[in-house]
Length: 198
Image (tube, rainbow, N blue to C red):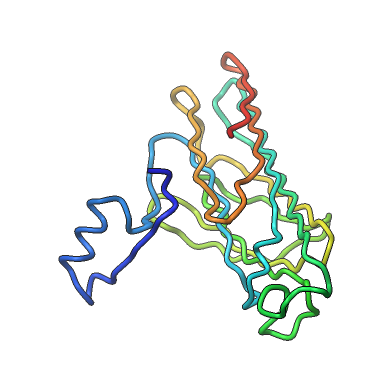
C-alpha cells in the first residue's frame, strides 16, 4: 500500500505477467498525474550498499507570476554519513575504484519543466536530458565524500504559462530513508502555501 514493492517483467518475456503487474500497480511505472510533478530518482553508482548511509533534505520553492509563468528552485542536501573505514567493503566500498566511503549518486530529476542550471556546491554539473512520457528527465552524477554533504541546486523554468490552479505531486525517492521535504509555493494569481510532507 505504501508503494515500497516493485516487481517488473519485460513485456517481451511474458506479456500476461507484465499486464498483471501493471494492473496491480506493482510494475514501478512512472505515474503521470495531472498538474506538476517532482521526483528526484536515485541510482547507486558505487556498486555497494553505501546508500544505507545516505539521507536527503529537499527544499522546493515555486514562484508563479500573474501571467502564470513558473520558475522553481530545487535544493537537495545529499548527506553521506558513511565512514571512510570500519565497515565491510560491501557496504562502504566501491566497485569502480572510488575511495571507501564515497557515494557515487546518479540523480534523475523528473519534472515538467526546463532545467536552466544544475550545480553541486556551486559548481556546474554535466546534465543529460531525455523524456519519460510527458516528463523531462534531467540526469547528472555526483560523488559525495565520506561524512560530508553535497548541496544540489536546480533552477527550473515552466514550458508554458499555467492556465489553472497549481497542483504538485511529489513522488517517493525509492531509497531506504525518506526525504525530509519542504515545499513552498508563491502564486501571484492568488495564494501561497507551504507543506512539509511526512
